[in-house]
Image (cartoon, rainbow, N blue to C red; front, side):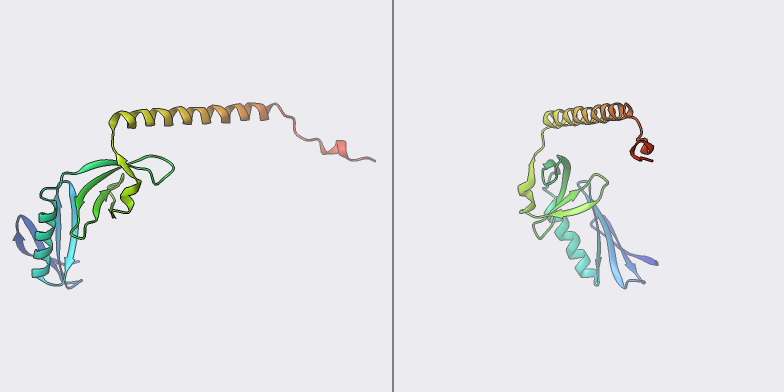
Length: 152
């Protein structure tokens, strides 16, 4: 993909992609990364302005996500102009979370997280012990001798 640098705008480089016929800007702020593509230079500058304005006073924070059967730690890294939060996942994947999804989030507490992880280790050890006991019991059984069930 051929990209041509067009401008530096408020510390962010703006490129033009000939292949896509769009202006591209990758912006990072408060550990948030966003790649924008717009058809006009003015609209990409407006998007940069809006992103900076939305995130300048925003401080990233960590939450517990309880929407799964396990507690997941999520980092909220930015606020979009439409009011959705930008969430950075475990593998640095980015997703967007609305207020509805925030009902599944709880305030992060490091002590509780350590207690939870300790409990998860205990549960895993118990599961492994259970599996080993089951294997030991099964190993005491003898294979079936089918010839005993046939009469001549």
